[in-house]
Amino acid sequence: MKIIMIAGDGIGPEISAATKEVLQSANASFKLNLQIEDEIAGHASLKKYGATVTEALLKKVKQADGLILGPMSTYDFKDESKGEINPSKFFRKSLDLYANIRPAKTYEGLRSPVNDFDLIVVRENTEGFYADRNMEQGSGEILVTPDVAISLRRITRQCCERIARTAFELAGSRKKHVTIVHKANVLKIADGMFIDICHQIGKEFPEISIDDFIVDAMAAHLVRAPQNFDVIVTSNMFGDILSDLTAELSGSLGLAASVNAGTQHAMAQAAHGSAPDIAGKNIANPYSLILSTAQLLEWYSHRSGKSEFVHAAKAIEDAAASLILSKEVTKDIGGNLGTKEAGNALAQKLLALR
Ligand code: ATP
Image (cartoon, rainbow, N blue to C red; front, top):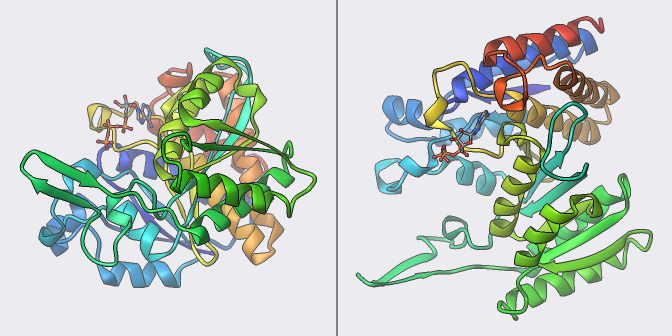
């Protein structure tokens, strides 16, 4: 498996270095035959090539089997004509990574403000209220007059169908329950279509139970009784917001893992941003990116049929759970280790499996 690794901005270089050490240990213990190639994007690429991402980089990523994208200073990148392209959007759109899969669960030994839960947010990734994804050319945001702005939201049948199918397939290997989250009481046409299509696809999976909630009520339900949910399928922006909530309910945004998956490509990416407030201090939690990378290995296992990758992914997750229990982790999740030391502790656990 050839993996392109982009360290990213802010805390990116620190959590990426920890992730790389873990990957190298997994490689040694599970004989994955990994090839890891470092590349740059974001501020480093803007400085060197005049653009946050380049076509040459995209070509390399397309030839590889997976991408690990460190956090990007997306907020700094405002003008595409100056090379300030949002790298996240760039890869999601160019590689058609339509499913953003964001698991969240409570861990033994880690205090959570809510009851124990284990769920996955399946977020549509290629359209919705993301103006930079919705047009063939130009942006879906329009400044009509200096005081009037319009942001367009696009919902298509094809994207609803494929994200619904991803959710039902995932639920089949879990607790067999899918919750559709929408705002069809207000967005009657677009979210009405989203719900209808999800229910239609659900008919192909008779063993899976289905319910649906309006997004605002869903936020309350998640805080009150997250254990009632298994797989939550929703559109782009609702998924973005709800998954930060579920990550924080699980103990910390530093646990927020995700994989962006398409049929041909996948990209591991922490669900949080570049956290400039804690960058360079060796305190960021690397688990978000490490667990995202485990998801990437699992995706590759399904795609390639090579079971050693899913075993490696499971070993990473188990080692993380055991280190959380023994508090050999970063401060945000109850330990007193630095970023580097937390990564090293996990890497050592994996090496012990050799
Ligand atoms: P950006 O502008 O790139 O989105 P941000 O700081 O506005 O960055 P996040 O990066 O999502 O947004 O971070 C929100 C807060 O969550 C940060 O201030 C930080 O304290 C915390 N945080 C985020 N990631 C981690 C992490 N890996 N470990 C510990 N704390 C984190």
